[in-house]
Amino acid sequence: MAVKKDTTKRKTTTKKKTTPKKKAATKTKKQAFGGYAINFAGRRETVEQVFGKKPIAPSEMTKKIWAFVKAEGLSNR
Image 1: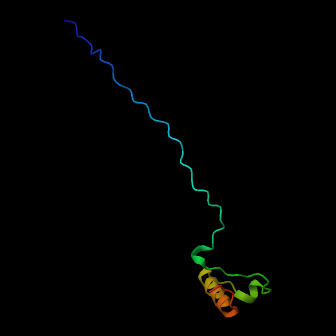
Image 2: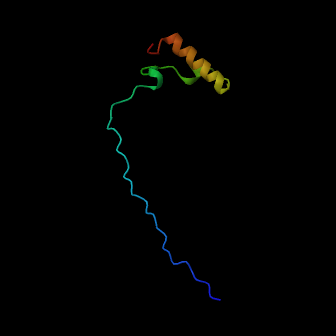
Image 3: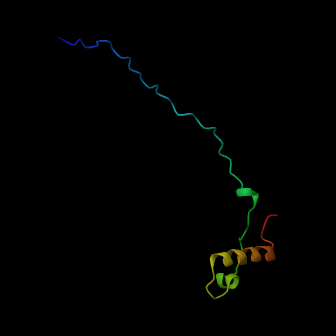
């Protein structure tokens, strides 16, 4: 007994070539995140004057920086 093969052709699908979408051309300078900026221009204080001479943790550095910014009025708000 001979087995007959199925001779039907399968349809092959081709993927469409997609072109990348163009982004809007906005080349304007963005404001600082949240609109909050600190200006340290012209300051003469050293790191030791702001943080002290002893080693401190990064969380303490952040607290001292913000205390310095608020005391000196360096923020734009």
